[in-house]
Each structure stands twice: as C-alpha cells, then as structure tokens.
Length: 214
Image (tube, rainbow, N blue to C red; front, side):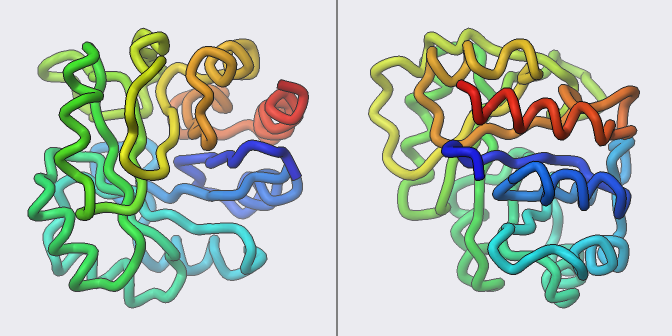
C-alpha cells in the first residue's frame, strides 16, 4: 500500500474500480451530480462498490444535494463517507453529518490564502477538508477540471482537522504537490483519464505507483 492515502475519484466502471483497488488506492470516489461526465446513479454505486474490499473507503461526491438525494445514496449501503463539493455551509454540513451518521468531507475551493483560512469555519462540522482549485465563475462543474491552485498557499497553514489535496494532480505533478504541501491524502480525477469521465486503467496504476515513489 502507498504510504500516502490516495483517492481515485469519478470512477464509473467495474474495470477501473478494480484497477484502483489493485493499485493500492485507499479511497474510491463516486460522483452523483447530473452535469458531471462522471455521474453515477445510486444503484450504480451499489454495483460498483459490491466487490470493493472493506478496507477501501467508498466516498459519494455530491453538489448541494438535498436530503432526499442523500438518503437514496446512503440507503444503498455502498458508501462509507459523503463528500460535499458545492456551497454547503458549515451548518448544512453539520446537519448532513448528524442526519446520515457518516463521515463528511467538505471540498474547499482555493484561490487565495484567505480561502484556506476560512475553512476553519468547518471545524466540528465535518471530518475532513479537501482543498481544490476554485473553478472560474460560470464553469459547468465545481471540480474535476484539472485545475490547480498555488500549492505553496498551504505551507504553514494551521489546519484544524484531517485534510487532502485535489486539483491538477497527475502522474507528473503529484510528487511536487506532496513535497510542497505535505498532504496526507491526495485526490485525483481528470489526471487519470483519457477523456472527461473516461478513466484509464494504465494511468490509475501509474499514478499510484508514482505516489508510492514520492
């Protein structure tokens, strides 16, 4: 297993789920957001997660989902954590955590150091922060676009809870990202794709191998 936690996000086929598990990923991400090319329905999550070993976490990624949508996902029994990737407030995040009884991650869109500092508002409301690049105004998706922020902004940041790094990670950049930020968990999506939503088995394997060598 790689010494760093690795989340392969946006998985949608049994083949790529299997590759991520074999490569040593600690977390698998399944996106439930209709506008995403990586969107999967709750029953697809159940099917994809069925053969995943229990030591591998299964994270559902949602964007400003309502309780009915979240209930559909949680009721599959396939998911071990919920990742909130929209504009969910600390209060909404805490309410989701309490209602559904699962660990909650909150993606934080970063452009400046003030964005990182503002994440402290989620202390006690979520279980993990995930720092991702802020997408341009009007962008179709809130993440998964291969954008990166200035990783040096995380240097010396007093982070109040477990966290991870996302955005612009690839086989070629991941070791620089880890060395710059000290991230304990890294989250990749577009960096292991041949096209938006089309994961590559070879790139997943190569990415995890690169992390292990960092």
